[in-house]
Length: 122
Image (cartoon, rainbow, N blue to C red):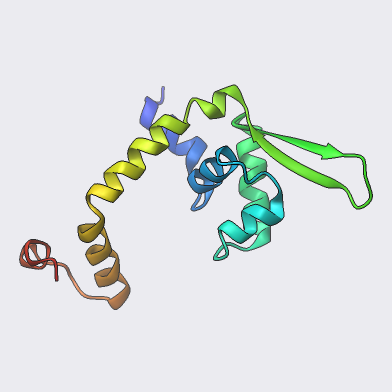
């Protein structure tokens, strides 16, 4: 049997899912709005991850019968229950922002990070 961390990983695995949930919670409900909020993601990948979030009952999709069809996403009650958790993750990242940026930049540049780098915030 999977533990809770395995389950949350299965449900939230995907580069953009946490951000999608956060932005939908903030009121960005249309696919075009979400695309503007996450310009690095392709429309195809966003659509796949939105579909997975819908399958996991974290969001619901409403299709309005107009031409062209209008689509909006909203959080389910289940999805809303994740927002405080995502908020805490964001606070953790804000608290460790300098260190995280150093680690990410070092990875991009292909060099190892030393304890000294982290202590000096290089």
